Image (cartoon, rainbow, N blue to C red; front, side, top):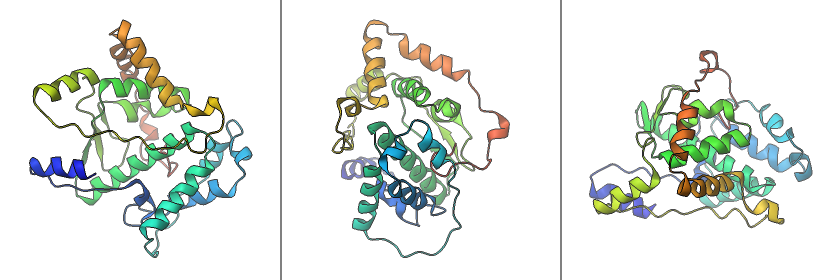
Length: 250
């Protein structure tokens, strides 16, 4: 975070830093729905959550709770709650998916808090192609128009755009090098401490990333083909702004 703040200061941009555990802070959430998700997951046996198809069904029953004034948690308490949630997830795929939902929620809330109506993400074409295959594999194909399109109005009052969607990761890397732009170091969350079997060491997202990047070496048009195919998908109008799961907005 310090590196990002330093880069923002060089260009005169206002910097707003957020940590993933801030999802439990009432300041960042409209409701206490994420608290409810944590209580649900941590109160159920792991073997029950591991049953195919049962965890998504349970999560879909969670509705946003009325906003109320709650005591602000300490930083350590929020970390402990996040660790409890991660420990309740039985696979690395589930952990990465929940963290991605948390990031999306924090970014959306910060956008609204700042009085902005547009949220620009730095997803490249390579990253979008990985998300397309990964989301389809975990049964979230319905959200492809929102999570991979150039422009999305899926989030109420906030338009999400991806201006780098047509640029490959390699192209962006070359651009940064030629223009002497500092690149923020990528820090992957260590989520493998509770994984016991070899089958759980790699998530669907990581396997998809290896598949896309490996295939792209011999077939350079792979990323473009995947992105063009998914770009034809559109979300039904009836699905906009309806009652949704507070965790995944689906």
